[in-house]
Image (cartoon, rainbow, N blue to C red):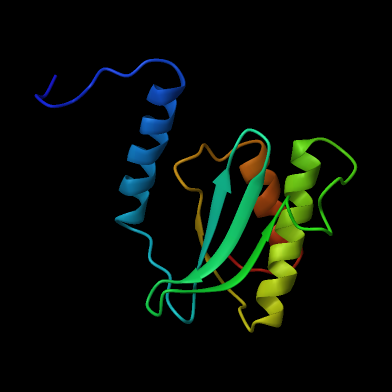
Length: 127
């Protein structure tokens, strides 16, 4: 073990591992004006998706389960993630974005993350 590192337990360990993976992923993924970055942030209750142009530092489109169109929707969390994916793809298309780079945010590509990505692809957003 390296000096200066704390031994974490439980949820703190999990969050630290996700943060480490996200930093490792961001070394290789950058959003440009032609292909902005689709960032997915997941918590236990909600999911947020943003389309970000990293060069300008602007958010071009965003959607979450906190939006009025999705909030209180039918189905489980995976169904709500599908709604968020379709909504962010629709808003990105309206902003003139055709293709994105997918940033899963250090989370495993399964469950709600995969449901959101599949719904965005079905709505016409290219990865």
